[in-house]
Length: 225
Image 1 (cartoon, one colour):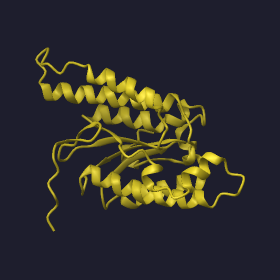
Image 2 (image 1 turned 90 degrees about the vertical axis):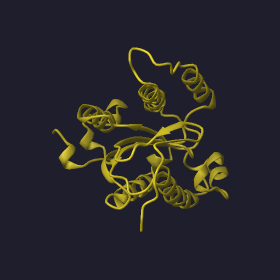
Image 3 (image 1 turned 180 degrees about the horizontal axis):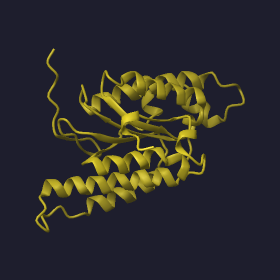
């Protein structure tokens, strides 16, 4: 069966550039993990950025750099402000997400690395067998619905906010529907992004070495240590 051709760029609320054969650094997060006011603040900065060709750079290249800066601002906010909800800190849910990421490795994509934090996930993938937006939709649907089943089994002492979430909720209320994705440009960029991902729990003070974090993974051939 012939694979559906994927556009090099698409847009929902955010811009997404997904060239054929690209390597992607993706962040997806729990619903409500970034305050609306902060989202608006970052978005306004991006919207006011000039995309005029300067210093010999093409408009396309400028857009890619601005998208990188835009998504980096969200990543840094998530990594420096581990806001509630913290459902991914529940071992059963973290395991569900980890297993799902590994299951799709070799089917939907080749997996380079990932790190599961309490309210968001970072990963790098390449050799996509489906459009990126479809991969993320299927991944979030499966893990979101599975996580909600786990949360529905909590005892009666669960906070009211949690009960309100799981009562009749769908996967779109577990994960924020849209993800942040960036292109990995070259080998140096790959090494930097892998280090950034694996050292997330170290930076947060949870462990003193990335391999001690249970919910991190890196394909051996991409490791330097």
